[in-house]
Length: 422
Image (cartoon, rainbow, N blue to C red; front, side):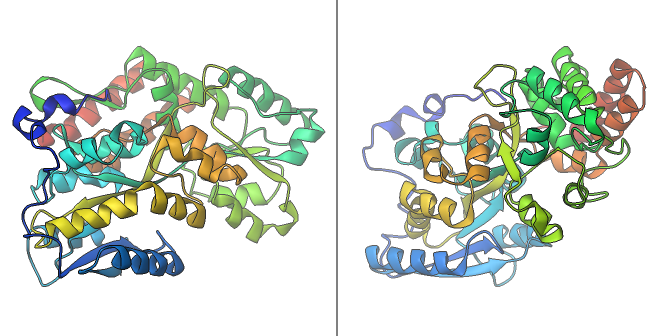
């Protein structure tokens, strides 16, 4: 998705009002309680306690009411709250980065474009968080934290194969992976339907999963030459291991496969190493991390970025105070603290040094600078539910003609997106 300058999209009169933003609706921020919905596991209780104490101490008259939500069923719960249904009325909500377009389409989110440009370092944000937070050229989601895939590798197996450093390019990656597989081990375990990893390869080639056309319509783009090159690289890499062509990375869970031994590499978030070590403590100090390689040396490959954005409910009764909470949570000080506490990638590229001391997170942060997200249309959830991409991948890995299968998958993606033209 091509990033557009938001400055050109703001009315000129708004730019002539210094210090004026979308903060006039609650008559000042004094004496307000801001109800904040955060997702379970996103931040430790110790972090939340420290943040609340500091924020309330530096913002007299504003109280923060933090309420932790479960991911299961949260989409419907958020939709009801944004529509003003029921008694729960959050002011600030943590949402998955790719969920923002669906909520914005319903008209329930506060437009934060002006604050984003003026105060929040919009040009420094990770693109994989910022782009899906934008809907119809307006910024509704404010990046909070990110996580993305890296390569987890066995240091001892690399040493045994005489490999002294991680690969710097995709060509080197293929060469090294082939060498790792010559001694009876799998050079890599890559399931045939790991479509998030495929997405990164497609983006690295300059392709797209889907592209927006005239009139706000979206069309599948898996059949473009660039996207086909991405699929071809996936095919070549996947063939260097024994990953099942007809299953994704959770069937069986790749952490268990890696823990069982004999696998030199997997593509996963760094946190999966904890699961691996619980299943096989003997691998302690034997697991390393490097960013997914790109086409050019020293430039990590494109990857899918997951994570969370912060949004403000349009029906909030405490607009000033809610914006102040977002400002603090997403600001450099507390965003850095969150990243260090939870081993996340900070929301800004310039904050990557904050996690440089942790090998897995540092690799993740390097990749996040070139991270992307799924197409910014509410219809993408329908694509994931049906997911013709997985079938496409399996068919190609099974020997079917890539161009034919890509056209078929593209047509299905287009049909699934058609009802969501904006």
